[in-house]
Image (cartoon, rainbow, N blue to C red; front, top):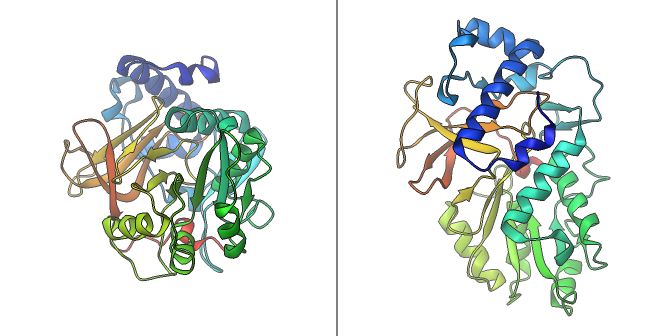
Length: 325
């Protein structure tokens, strides 16, 4: 394989396809779990010539197997959120540098240099959630920011209220990123006009509050924080890249990540823009695990290549940041 950093220089659909096909062949050879899955599908590797032909591994495999290439020691193990007794997904990370480059470059595409941002978080601290890929990302972005006003405030809503009302860090944007239920809890008890402020919700209300639609959620939060739009982050333990929405629930992917929508009645085929189906993800940053994942999320593509997340398949496991303690 070429240099790991080359994926972050992708500038065309042709380059993406070339990298994806190369990575597919590499992961078939070196990831025994993925190899067994591809063989069970009776897919002839040499006949795969486009990304739509690549088999997508059901995301549930990360709960039952170590989805990793070779026997390289892990630098970290990220686990999905969950309650006691729940089987949690495991993602063995053999190169944290790739993950850091992925989320930094992805963040910069939407919000600019983290050095110019003050980060406030309504999530657990790294000490409370040492195996959370989300918390790891937020902490590393804070480290790049180096703003003394950065902080985690899940356990201190009054502290966050005071910080938001203080004078902003000089020449820095202020980003509040949080678990959705935590943002709702804060907004309920401390509504106010906090503009200018970028509010980013990371998804998930299950188990904490009555489920509401995205439109209702964003309307509630935008009014409570005094901002026009609520931003969103779409990521998961099994990925090393994120999609970001800067309003209206429409997500953009970085050039090394791609969304395909599979037919709910025929999961081996795909539907076009405007049609609802299951979300399949190609994440080229997942170089040492599996880059081709079939999620349990429902969504749809738009003609401008943005996508929406519409919900979950019925009977799918509760998951996501709402289960983070």
